[in-house]
View (cartoon, rainbow, N blue to C red):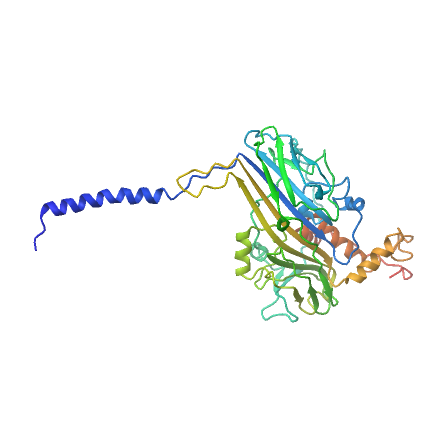
Length: 457
């Protein structure tokens, strides 16, 4: 059968005509999306110290919060209480704008919060490095032992060990690698207007709520920036983390189910010495895979939560208990425990995204609200023991007789470790605590002082 030249020509011409149409249809599937004119971030956090009595609002200032002492960043620092970091930016005022956010009466801070532009500080002078005297420092001596997974016994293949004296730089990097979310929330950056700030340092009360109607107004702010926060994105309940068992034994952790929680994560650390006097830093996490999670006690996007749940890094929302294997913290002093319940995330924009991909989306404003609830405690300290300790100190009396009147005596057993661990966590979390422990290994060696025999123990 012969095919005429005319048929071939028509076929080729038709194909040439169809190809651009198919290409144009494919290209049209990509919608033009422009950044919003204005963006508001609200990070909401509840921090608690299970086993310790709730501190009055005034005392919260000792930890960076409390009445008159509230500061931007408290959602990250685990200062006990309810906190919110708010940041706002508008393209119409790139250097920042004075704005006002109307808040519901339930917040306890109604009618409004003042959003103030971040003050840009001039760069400071770098101090001159001090010379290191020969013989003042000693080579590192110690190791890190890392365990993971919930269970009463240590699993096969654990712990993973890093020996300071033998580890090459590459081993350090590989050992400390881990997952961490990308920053997507409130930040105190130039051009951002934030709350709390130097003009408004009020704190939320124990029963405060952000649920209700909100709006933002000010120079350069879109006129229709109004939105509502529902109960699902309000302050989460405090994490009522309970412990049973001493650090040298199996420590059983449990907590009530939280409807808002999308996932949980727990880690713990301590520092102690083995039989030879070598320092050991012990790390443990609730992950089913080797992940200590230095960067995971923080907000995480819904996509990250889904991924990390699938990878078994996080505990599922239905889980309400976890056991720390027996004996891994037997040598530790003041072991610190941290836990996070990841809450839902709310994303709003106006006008809504057009369903027709041919129409460009040019939102006037967008709002992101992130939630979490965290807990920090000393490992093995029961809630009842914490209440007794708080009651003993509530009247200003020392916890143990004689401790305040004997400057030649060390703090009572356990007190120093507790203060150091809690202070380190409030100052910057497990990352700084580990850094402090390792810094001590590389730093100047302290001379051991003789302890008088009649010192209180």
